[in-house]
Image (cartoon, rainbow, N blue to C red; front, side, top):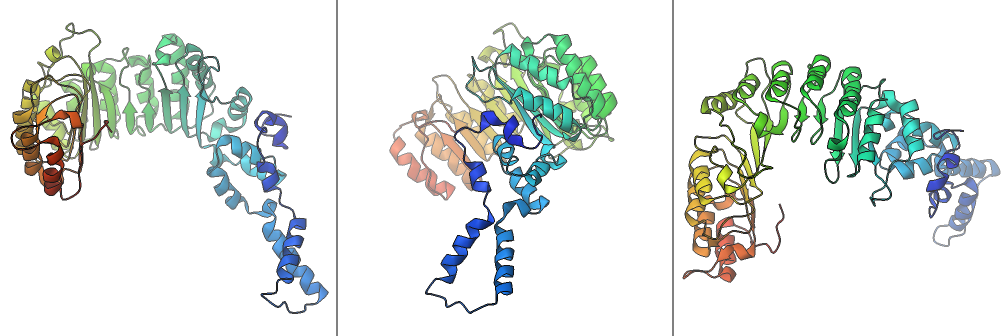
Length: 460
């Protein structure tokens, strides 16, 4: 008798410890008789005399209401959808009817495979027997699939083995997630690409793909485009070293419905932006660009022409352009020399005052700015310039940098109540002859129209 066959308690015996769920669900009619006696003997309400047949009918009707096994399929289905997989499996052993609902396709459209090595991870893992039963009985029902793996190569290889068996699926969304270091990068490239292309070829309706930090390559992207060009809407593939600009350009040229794209800056090109701006392409909604340096001082970044950015904004005026920077100060030379339509900026390492000054002049669409580190010189003039020129700015986060209290109050006054998110570490604020850090919150609260205090720890 396999996992998923009635009764489920046999297959899920390893889940039954410390669980009384079955006893709770097995409410029988004889429980109701005791309740009925209490109600009838209550002095509050005088019970009228009834005939024997009438009393039996009432008892039977109320017993049916309390017999969970008679609930309609759609009601049980709704309950099951709120239960974690383990509890759902336990509940399926209550009766045959509940076990039937356990195998309804709607319950298997969304599934997350959790693959962890017990010796190195405290996270739970999907049981191998259950994985095989899902592949055997429910592969055709899977539509929204994700794989969450730990840092071990064994877990990533297990995920690839499962992918290679999904030959009868119609997956719409696929996500590969490494909870620690990118373990998929340790899998042989040929093994990973072979498994991934099984899904690309057989699904033919993929709309969302998140395959960041993986060894996906240009040929596999061409297979993706050949089979899913009409349906692809979201593609996230930052930190994929085997993908080039040509591979992304192929996606941009043929997937005219693509609305969200995440990639590394080194493969972003003018040609890609122009392809995303073509008349036949839908309006892009979200473009995320990770600017990462692994070897300080050894990487020179190319520049994107202003006309390419202008073409993108003309075609997709509401697109969010999000840029994450993990660079050293000497590596910023190529950025923000001309007007750049970035809306969200995050600096994970130190950024110079000169670059922040450029942002104030050349980033008029800026909505959110987060600076996690800076030098020892105050950022007074740079922040005030940003407040004056970035009229859409609504969110600011500052940490490990310095701003005088007076300059910060002036920044908030210039921005006013459009600042909906203001996260400033308390050590950032430097007292001067006008304000102390304790006095700043009063002035800032007045300009914001709400109570505000500096943070003791970052929230971004």
